[in-house]
Length: 194
Image (cartoon, rainbow, N blue to C red; front, side):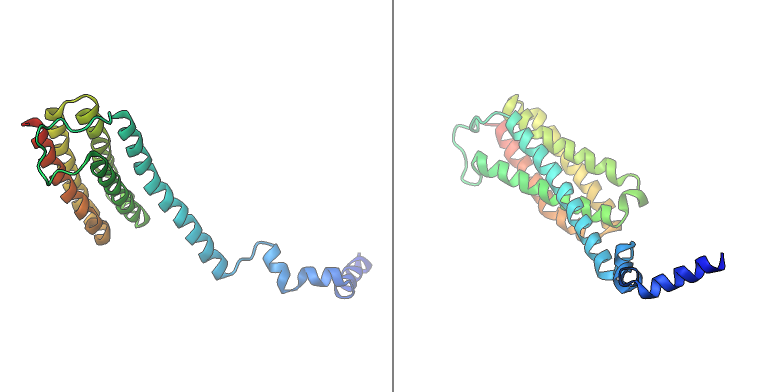
């Protein structure tokens, strides 16, 4: 038994392949990772999760726009402050992007676990924003769309308050979306009383 252990010691020191396997480079092969590698992997995972968090609401909004008709507004004389339909929909998608970004910031801080109401409120506002276009332009029901707009505004206010406790930047990102939904309600009101 003693000869066997001498042979192993001898082989490790004399065999260049064995010596290379025990050197500093061997640590990287055996699972050792530098801080830089760990940080790079974390950054990659963060970017992937950010892409998913933003792509899901924007993609769902594109589907909602597709489900809604592309008919022009049903307003006889449209005021100058009402945007064309393409601009309206593009801004709704930008709002979905901002909301996805804000939700990702809250998720990254662990806010959906810290406050169990954060996710249902976010999903409620997302669902309401997704059904607005098909209701107003697809079904031609601006009264229902106005109710959905008011619900969306309320859900965004609740979302903003919950997000502010977790990440103030996320709450600030929601401000343009809140302003947009308020404007959308005014446009919707004009559609009701045209």
